[in-house]
Image 1: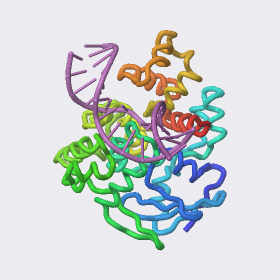
Image 2 (image 1 turned 135 degrees about the vertical axis):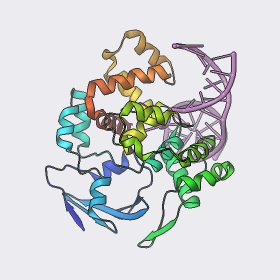
Image 3 (image 1 turned 90 degrees about the vertical axis):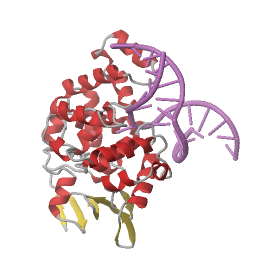
Image 4 (image 1 turned 180 degrees about the vertical axis):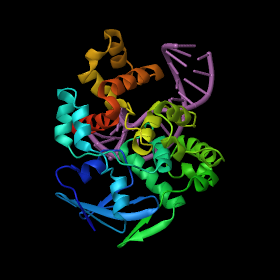
Length: 290
DNA sequence: CAAGTGCCTTTATC
DNA sequence: AGATAAAGGCACT
């Protein structure tokens, strides 16, 4: 099955899957193999054609956010020459609409880890606690359910390479399993309230919360700030902050909670309601330069 | 090849 | 409030 993209729907599959927002896709030949919502499927792109197998068209459209009017979004976020450069270079990069549970655990695991290491952890977690499915000659694994992870021992999670994150994953899984905790329900409440709920979970700080909000809970205004974004802010957006603040940011290795808040608030105010898209373009651009 | 540095940070403690 | 340290271990140079 194929989707005709056309000029009104710019999309670049490689950018979307390689920009670091998702960790469980593998390229074999020209096809990308992955699992979303417990369904293994494969996709490939040839110019304006997006071809897929083993999945319905609507799922593909939804997962890759082909419903976003990317042209309009890019126009709205292009506020200066720096973001313009990123947008020109990586046009077609789309935020994905990931599963909130998988996204939450992925970013709890992602703290203070490199992307290859994150992929490794999530792969091991899925292989150990997920369900095995197959597509063509490959085995793929669904992401483990909250119940399954809540029942896993911390030492079993440690064995997947999670390190000190194992206890956060275990505790968070237990909380999510509790009656009354509605992770999916956070799609319906506003950004601030959803963020407040997320940061109350073990292992979830403002950065992890913003990633989950942006990549899985429909909050396109979320603006995650990690070390790369901090560098981008210092390099291109320093003039929007006081001299002392900039000096402090340059000197300190890590971001305090209030410093995070300042950078985050700037991003959302400056780029507007699609700030998350701006973040993703700037982030990917910064990483590709080094 | 070994050793050092960095990694899409959060939490605990003072 | 704000500063400080500690927390796996892998990947890259």
